[in-house]
Length: 208
Image (cartoon, rainbow, N blue to C red; front, side):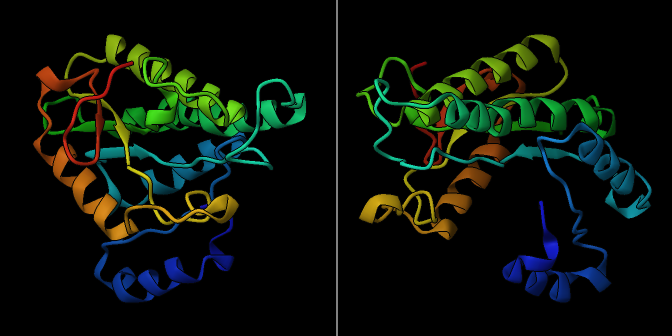
């Protein structure tokens, strides 16, 4: 979390689980290499928090005018900002935390993407976001090529009722609980032969 002190719901979870050594809340800006390294060191220094069996790259943003953002009008500043968070961020986090993941088939490396990053399913619009998610799909596949001991998954969480999902007067089709429940089932059941799969929260495989 970039700013844990302002994340009210995370603070509630911290109150519930911190004394049971079930939750460690660490400040981290995924676009800042020093911040990412500091977070990995903080986790490593907590014996009960390691090893990490599931590393889930979930941080993501969109452009200021999401979901419109036509490619004819996208601005460089928006594109670079979105790419830095959505693509460079997961790369830095994975590099920093990979040494804490056991090299066995019980571990999972997950990149939260979107079907909006699918070239085959592209309908246009949301230019910065689509481009970033297509790029993170390739990043995940590169890690899949490099890691042979456990599955690397690219997940579409569905259209979720979040600030981004409800942007522009819309309403997502899924509650966060429904999305997370489905994704955890997919992750739990993933095996090494599933590595490199682009899959959505309900188990359906998506085209690249």
